[in-house]
Length: 278
Image 1 (spheres, one colour):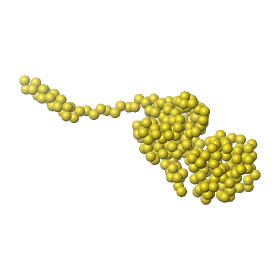
Image 2 (image 1 turned 60 degrees about the horizontal axis):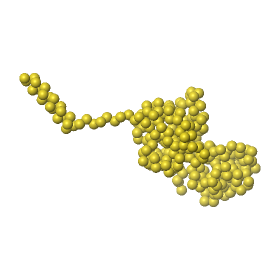
Image 3 (image 1 turned 90 degrees about the horizontal axis):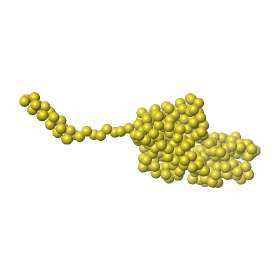
Image 4 (image 1 turned 90 degrees about the vertical axis):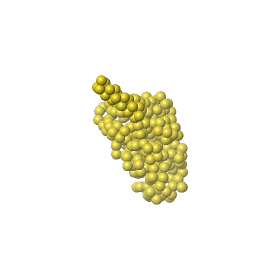
């Protein structure tokens, strides 16, 4: 009888304890992560083409993270920024690089890796120019891509640091127009992105590369708060060694990059301050 009463008392105590202090639900591992991809203002690419292009990379990420990674094309910069602000994206890979930089600075994302090679502003001059560096062309006619564009800000920051008066620069909508204006003698110095199609055939256009700006991380990948620090480290390691295998080299080539690098975190963190410096 005593044993039965003791057992009943223990059972009652456990029941009361569970009622008073209910067990907290355990967090479940994510079954899906959302990867936003922005290729900037590259025209003519449909959302489905972006999904198909980046799915192999998303699959590599998914194996590391232990969950499906779904590609979502960020077809406008506003959509990309709104999605980062709302923490809707778990991962974002974007160019121009100022958007991932804002994701890190303003919205709590963390750097994972960036594409290789780094990005530069490439300064061009007519072949007949005798200039050996941009400093020799201060006060001459300067032409840059569209004023609001990342590359115009990028080139301007380098020129500003070299003592140029950027307020006198001319701007054109497309980087190809920078080449055209230089080719036709309407400017003495112009800047385009190192990854721009405008650089192809500059020799035939009668131009030459004069100088490159300091390098900045290209096409950075950043991670939101659902991705743990351990997962970021594992993902970074896998991406850096991606091109060690032929299939990884092929994947990178289809993305238009030579691979991934993990050395751009500090520069990405400093990018916006450099661009915005007066």
